[in-house]
Image (cartoon, rainbow, N blue to C red):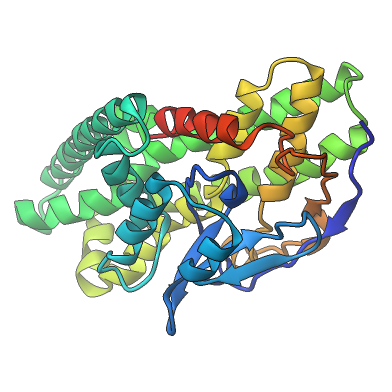
Length: 335
């Protein structure tokens, strides 16, 4: 199989413009993103169905004209659209996805995984709450109510602090991207693929890792001064929350590529996984450069032009029903 030719990809100005990756199970919607739209409520950004350059920006009715979304995807879209949040964020999508999976729309395994993930997240948040309470109790210049600390813990928890830091969502996702990058580099060194092709995905992973480490470190630095953090929280809660949301934005969209590579067995499957991964990865917005104080070069991020076989999905080369089943399995693994 000849390798597809990389093509330059569009670079958004902000993460809101780029949208949030949604774990749809319909094959044609793999890598699709959503963002708020004044006219339609939600707009979907879908990789070009032909496999060519660019993306389609569609309302949900337009998606239905393009493909036949699964029941899970219809429910997930409706759950995100019903969110009262002014903007769609990775947290909004993750919560909606867990609710839909918890309703059984993606199968029993995804249901069980969603229930377990919600329980783990609740336990982690309680641990973070205790950590902040103990840290505040160690100083005497400022007092805080239990409700105030709990609200702050909800914002802080995902980045991972205190004794349970390694179990938090953001450190786990960053480690997964680091693992994918290392696995791809090792695979290339074995002569399984052209180094230039692997470096395409590795380059995007390097950017995500570099930006992720920076914004995680900046957020944890804020927690190191918990007294100052609480003062800032009282004065500018939205600004503080925005700082702690940055890691989720930077790492958004990497869960499925990590799962795809982990599930690929054998050179043929791995090469097909690379095509899928390359097509669905989105360029980091210029906003990420402002966060880390460095330029994010669009040229370092590429999309991949796939080659389509007869009666095959244009990314994985598999039967569409098999892909839906596979994607439902991924929902269980990424709850």
